[in-house]
Structures are given as structure tokens and as C-alpha cells.
Amino acid sequence: MPDLEGLLLVQKKAALADPMPDRATRIRRLDKLHNAVVDNRARIIAACNKDFSSRAAAETQLAEIGPILEGIAYYRKRLKKFMKPQRRHAPMTTMPARVEVHYQPVGVVGIVVPWNFPFFLGLSPLVGAIAAGNRAMIKTSEFAPASGELMKSLLSEAFGEDEVAVVTGGVDVATEFTKLPFDHLVFTGSTQVGKIVMRAAAENLTPVTLELGGKSPAIIHPDYPLDEAASRIGFGKGFNAGQICVSPDYVLCPRDKVNAFATQFADTMSKAYPAVRDNADFTAIITDRQKQRLEGYLKDAEEKGAEIIRINPKNEDFSGTRKMPLTIVLGATDDMLVMQEEIFGPILPVIPYDTMDDAIAYVHARPRPLALYYFDWDKARGDDILAKTHSGGVCINDTVMHVGVDDIPFGGIGPSGMGHYHGEEGFRTFSKAKGVLRKGKINATAFVAPPWGNASFKGLMKLQNLRFRKRKIK
Image 1 (cartoon, rainbow, N blue to C red):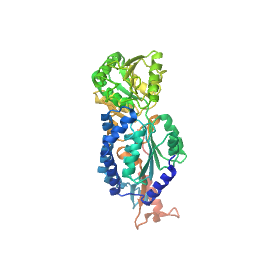
Image 2: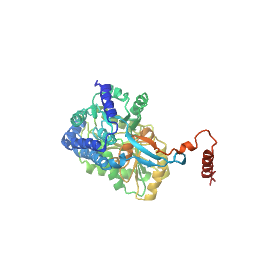
Image 3: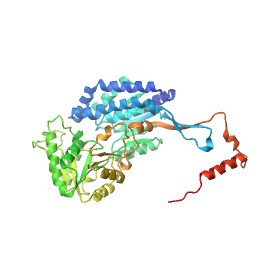
Image 4: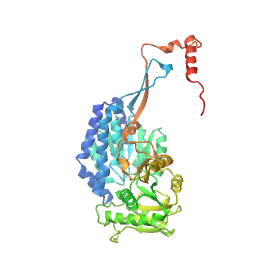
């Protein structure tokens, strides 16, 4: 067990010694992180490949390395603006005065990293925490040990432990980590574990950002071309073998087009992945346990009457590997595990609907998802979907790619999480918005101070009554 309390004490002392790092210090730290990633691209790719037993190098480039560098560049460019105090309105009762909001680092941020993107989901919140002027402690996933050890090595070379510290270990370490009195805690993982983390953080009144997940739907409008839908949904579902918190979890398809979509999806994915077992482009399942869970979903669905379509162009045998082909499930019902749990793997149920109102009602009847995907060229109908549904984020005519946009917040709602990072919202998440009222030599309050009933106070009340008269309700 690492000395977690000792590490936290070191970082808290450092934060107290320099509670408001200047812009140059923050940029220097961001540049150190930038160089650590740039200098070790090959090692990051190799570590991810080792943890998954087979991880597409292109996926690591696109989802682990690229977004981190983009995020650093984003904050680097905008730090001056984000750090600047904001002028706010001074009400009549405080004038003459200057009112501002100052954004101060919260102190020490704890980050719990999942296994599915072991670099991006650790370093992305770290970028925001550093930009906001904080120190950080990171707990890596025990299910991605090679990535965790590499991250620990890279960050210990780039930073002192009073700036950024990385700890590895199993569930016992993670449990103790979440009990620490951080100034903010970021957790990415399942909804079930998220509840435990939030309960632990509550003991210290630690604010939390929870990035959880859930069942993110993809809705296809009847007018949308099926080949285009198959291609775009397929990209999001095939990426990392569906092991993404925002992966399209199921498809809502017009009833008379379900079979045609399934055929088109199978054809499209067969061209993208003409082989699976020894194909370096197709990522494996992270552990045997996760693979058994996914196979259990399919067995349960099949036993309850669903049709299972495995996209296996070469009829390969996957025994002895952690590879698992993309699989379509037709006829899935609510009593099947595949429709009760977040899938987090290469399985795609296709659910029929009769009207768009039925599709929206289907989404409303379930917990609010982390993402929602809608496929329709008509902007007005797209706007209608945006207005009528709740989700952490949305892609219209795309899947998963919104996570890589640095200038919008990323976060869930309800069972799919709370809080945000990325973009300006990420900077604000890791900052304390401190309200400041500044007065000069003129003290106007003295004119209305007790004893109450003086002429100035009466005049102020008359002004208020004139200004805040009763309004007509239309």
C-alpha cells in the first residue's frame, strides 16, 4: 500500500505555499506533459497493446495520444482569458463598488482512471487540473498494469511528487484513494462503483466529477440512408471493440428497416474488419472476465429468443484469445441482460420503433445516457430531438467523436454522471469561483446605516419600490 496520506500531505503543503500559480508556471507544466507524451508515443502504443493483448495502434493514436495533445494546446492558447477575473454587475445597494469573480485553484485533485482508455482518461482531467493551477494525484487501473506503470514512470520524470503523483495497485488501493480528503475527485467508471466513490467522497465533503456511462442510444430517422447509418454507427461501435463509455449501446431503427440495417451493418463491418482473430486493427477484450460477461449476455439473449448475428467473415475460431467479433442482436427484450446493463463491448442490439414519438418515449423510459446519437439530414427534426431528450452529450450524424472536441464540456447527467471537464467548463470545474466585492474610500453604506429610518434609507426604499413594482403575468 503506497503512502497515500503522505503524498496528499506533500501536495497540500505545496498548494498552500503557492496557492495561485501564475500563467507561466501553468504553461511550463503543460509543456512538460506535452513533451512526455510526444517523446513516448511508441511506448504508449506498446503499453496499450500489451494490456489489451491486441490494441489497434491507430486507435491509441486517435483516442489516447491525439486528444491529450489537442487538450494541452487548447488550454495553452486560452489560459490568459480563463485566468482573468470576470467583471460582474454591482447592485444599487453596494455602489460605488467593483464586483468580480476570481478563479482560484481548488488545491489537490484526485483522478481515478479506468482501463478502457488508460492514458486519455487519466491525462485529460490532469490537463484541466494543471491549467487551473492545481496539484494532482492519479490512481491507475489494475486492469491496465502496463499502461499504469508507464504513466507512473513518465509523470515522475516530468514532475515532482508535490506537483503530480501516480499510484498503482488493486481495489484496496483504489478504495483508500477515494477516501482521501481531496479538494476535488474525478472518477470514470461504472454507475455502480460511482455510487460507492461518491459515498466515500461525501465523508470528506469532497466535490466529485463522475463520468459513468449507461446505454447510449442511436436513433435512425426513416429518411436516413441505411448505408450511411451503418458506416457511422459502425465506426463508433467497432472502435476499441465497443469498450467506450459513449459507444452506441443500441440502435432504434424503423421497424420495416431492421433487417435491412442489420444486413448493411454486417456488410460494412465485414469490409472494415475482413478478419478478426489476427487482425491488428481489431482490438481485443481487456480481460477474460469481461469477455465471459459479454458472452453471457449473448447466451442469455439467445436462450430468451433473440436472433444473434456474429460478423465473422472468415468463420474464425476465437478460443484461446480475447478477441470477440461484432455481433448484432435482433429481437432483444427488456428481460434480457443485454438490454439491462451497459454492454461495453462489440454487441449491438437493434430495436424496432413505429413512430419517432415511440423512439423518444423508449429513450425517456430509461436512465439518462451519457451520449445520444441521431441520424437525420433535417436540421429542424434534429433540433426537436435535442429539445426533447436528455443526455450528457449528443452527436447528430456521428458517434463518439464529440468527446474529442476540446471546446465543449464532457460529462453525464443523472445515472450517467455529474460534473464536467474539457473546455472552459473543465477549467471552472477545477477552480473555486470566488466572488469579490471591492470598495474604495467612499462608503455609501454609512448613509443608510442604523439607526434605521433615516432619510437616505427611506429614499433607497422608494427607489427599490419604483424599480421592483409588481409585474403583470401574461
